[in-house]
Image (spheres, rainbow, N blue to C red):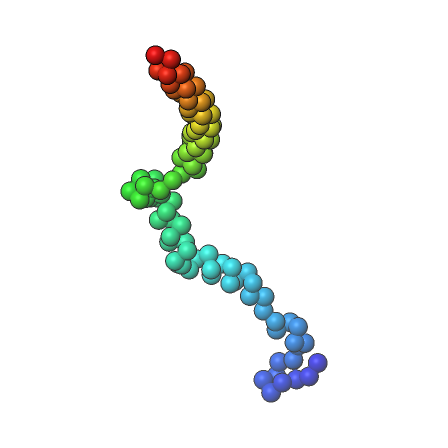
Length: 103
């Protein structure tokens, strides 16, 4: 080792390196940030925000999807029934027309 002008021996550069990762992590945790503020705000007021803005919750979405499925199935049944009724009405109309012609 060499003596510096101060009289202290010089040490290898490796001993002078600082590990700032721990310090920066701690500083970030303590520093206020917009993300942290928003997280706290939404955690505190989420229920009233959802209600005020009439936002869908996961439960609402699942409920609506089930309702849509039931309505879609019912529409299919109604369309089938409509076709059957239309066919029956056509047969009855033909029968009525035949009876009128016979008179």
